Amino acid sequence: MRFILLLILSFFLIFPSYAYDEKIKLNRTNIDTDTKKETIKINLNEMLNLREIKKANKKYASIERYVKETSRKIFKKGKRTKYKGVAVNIFKNNANAVVFIGNEKERGTGTGSIINREGEIITNWHVVGNAKKLHIWLMPDDPEVMTGDKILWTEPNFIGTVINRNKGKDLALVKVEGLPKNIKVIRFGKTSNIPVGSTVYSIGHPKGEAWTFSSGMVTQIRPNYKWSYENSSHSADIIQHEVPTNPGNSGGPLLDEKGLMVGVNSFTRGDDSELINFSVAIEEVEAFLREEIKEDKPEYIKKKKKPTYITKKCKEKSKYLQKKCKKEQSSKSGTGIKKTYPNAIPGDTNNNGIEDSWYVDENKNGKIDTAFVDDNEDGIIEAIMLDENENGVWEILVVDEDLNGYPDLLFMDHNEDGKADVIAYDYNEDGEWDKFEKLT
Image 1 (cartoon, one colour):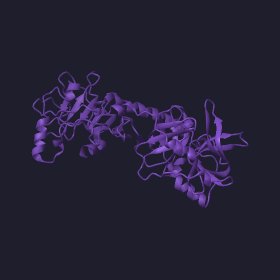
Image 2 (cartoon, helix red, strand yellow):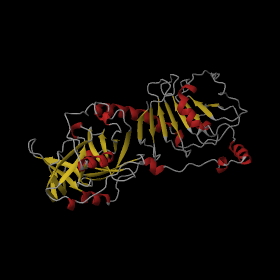
Image 3 (cartoon, helix red, strand yellow):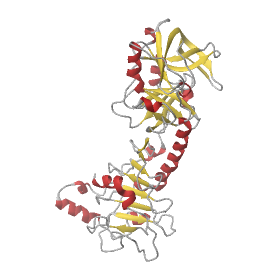
Image 4 (cartoon, helix red, strand yellow):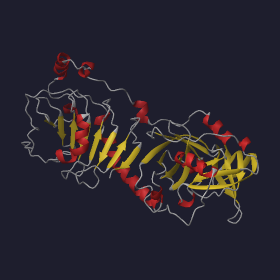
């Protein structure tokens, strides 16, 4: 889409903010108050929900602080064991299906396994705790990124939603929108295929050592095993083994010699010299996945309605219908945006005689701080720009790329140098940004 490319590449510089006096003297030839210009009726949809849009800036600031803090805890300690043969393939085939989980609410980290292409991740209940949202990171393409303190800071941050929990089994299910289409998925095996004495493997992030690969022997299979944490009690079929398990491993996969997931690494018992490690058996995971999803959807989704388009004829290519459509859209001032913002200053960015942009002083202090753009003049706002500190630089650009009335892309210029440095995506358009990515 023409307008999106233009906005993304140069909107921060092309559309500076302006102060204005009582005569509304603006420094732009395409912003005027000519009442002869044709006015488009604008649908009042979620693109005009500025309160929700403004939350994105505060949300990212919170994420930024958390990621920096968590990144400093990730380190490389000593030399890791180099595996050969079968073990190498087990890691290679499954590492990209293992995620790093950050729990900002409870200041913890853990591991999870992607179990399907719908973006569902299995982990432990004690990893998610009472959090509804989690930070999710995929394994970086460049292994060198995993050394030092920038592993998370330089990688895209997905936002996962906890959609189901089973506290008794110590299991939780997380859903992530927008994962790559070629994402790796872990396949399930059976505990009957790992008899006592067989070798099993794990991938996780023990004590901050991201994507560590470990192995050990199965020492027993224990049905209906009971254990407890500080404030909770649990019971499930478990696998007892010697694979090193430390804080950060929780929620990660236990794999058999075929690379199939046979358990979720969960807890340890014993002192530092004789640790006995346990994983919730895969059959418990399968039973959990058959449970009814109990988590409520956000209120935004419940209330979300399909926006009403002005007319389907606006989409037609026929010149006659296009002309008729524009005629039907025209109206007197006081409708559309002017109904919500009666003092909005209209603009005609392409100088074709039709108003397609509106500049607003939302806090009524004499300075423009908000702009709305309807580039294709179909009555649906495609983009909103915000200058919250009113210093002449648009810090936020929100875009409705699919033109359905709901924002799905967001660009931020945090250092206010006229270039976007962060992009956010709302893949399912539920009002929650699903992914934040720093732009180089």
